[in-house]
Length: 118
Image (tube, rainbow, N blue to C red; front, side):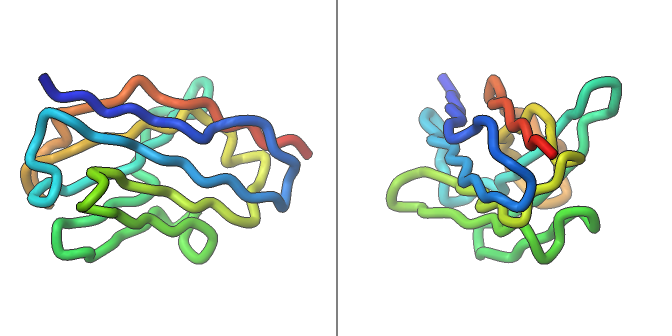
């Protein structure tokens, strides 16, 4: 059974930092493309950052230069370091896994709330 468990969300002031973690189990982590999505109230879910098995990364324009996605295959964990947070980064952040960079994300975590106050 695949499980993705996010942690690290919380309340932070604008300009602050948070690091999200996602521990994966039940899948062959090192061959999976991993992503961090976010969904703000009243908005569609969007991909914030993704990382392929070989470590290639991609970011949404709105987070580029502020967020960094990374992975530790030994710990089956993917991270999202979020710096210079803005109120518009407030959202539920979801970890997701895909069997290929061009394939749909078909495994999802429950999400963790990130709230950035102004």
